[in-house]
Length: 318
Image (cartoon, rainbow, N blue to C red; front, side):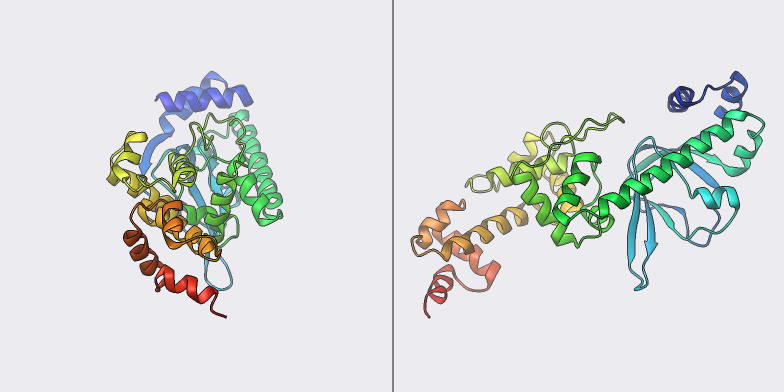
């Protein structure tokens, strides 16, 4: 009931609500929790319900001509979610609406909305929702016209992404997952992300109180050359969680474990440094966080398929 009252207060700030509407709508709204992947609306079906998203993310998925699923829209907390055309015109929807994370919603049936049509504020409220929906679509289209790096920067600065898997973000931005993750690393490591205050009170600051996963990756990028960084238990302690929870969150968001991410950063740097004649293998090992040259050589060979000495010789044998 508390969340319903909060929603109605928000509505009242947009369109004054009569006592009758306030009393009649409350019993028609039901709070529900849904797990990631839950399908709210299927393509070809009628949108018989609408939802106010309280927490988490709901995604609109479309299928391209090649049969690939593309994230067409991300709904954030406080958004009203449904296919408006299908909801009001009773036509089959072309999209799939799914929970991108665990979500909490307030649900109302179309048949119950019809009961509220006697109140003028019902029409005004859905006009407002339609306006917000149209504006959101226009904003998304403008963002997608930006060059790739600017697109990712704008997305991270203007949208809360707490807990949303990276492959969803990449799809929404029309990028390959690897390209998206590379650009995220570049932008965070160069301190280019300047998040704006969120009107929805979302914790959207990557360096302060924003997405824990993005805070962690920023920390790793800044510290991956430290020899003691591989201790995931210590890293987890910094964020008040267990190492299991830490890795689960990191895998969910970035598609790999903490250890694999650190190794990749170190190996990419090491391979680059080995191109320079001034750097010995032992110096490269120390520079990327390895106290023991044997451990470095073993990790390098496992990553690239050949030992660092051979790689260095190959670079300059011609």
